[in-house]
Image (cartoon, rainbow, N blue to C red; front, top):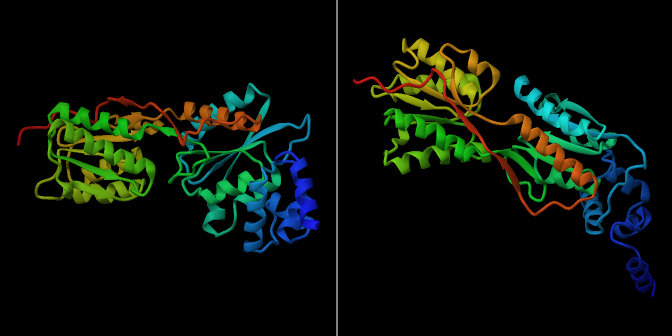
Length: 347
């Protein structure tokens, strides 16, 4: 009879209106424990936390903002180049400012390095929404934000976080355009440096590179492919490996601009001139790309618009709007041709 009465009370409640005390009763814990889980506080066992989070999600529980409370979007970075971070923040601020919404940001690199949690401090601050520019975000992190009723939007995550919306650039078409440019210049022996191919963006760029060669009928020598990470040191090391071969490539497509900077250094050390002896293409179009000698041909990502799109999605979710079932919102890229690419010299 007690169970039947409980069911009748639950039926009268709208989805999302179940009291914390009832959630606690269903989970077999105290209301303060549910409150700790809801607000991301420590002191709850992992199995208990998961059980409470599942109930909160199942019953559509959402933390409600106090009427008239200030809006705030928190942006989470992790080892991001300052120039890229500023473009993203500017895009977010343009959208947020129009709604009288403040924008805060944090770099969680030290916390991640020390093995400390980074989600819980955000939940304690209870922002209106969170935007992560952080490749290590997981579906479990997304579930934590969902349980607390805080909208989460991820910019260029490593993997699939659906139903958490993700925003990024069309990496495949960007790499396709970069490689086609080299093919049209006459290059047939083209090397490629990638980021971790487990990452969605790195894998899409590699696929775009291969698609461009396939469509042009250019066979790819897989010994000219190097897989690594998006750093200057990685570009320098793998660039040197390619350039020191007896049959080096005449051009290299890089996974990002930092890798391209490293290839520039490797070319100098090998006494090769860019673009006379080697053409180089990057990806991102960071500010420094135009300052190199020669300036770098690269694929421009619209970081400002990516940030603005993420902010629009975050605020729409905070307003209670249900987004279309779309895993990833992709914005167009543009090939910026500068002085680092030219036709290959006859050998």
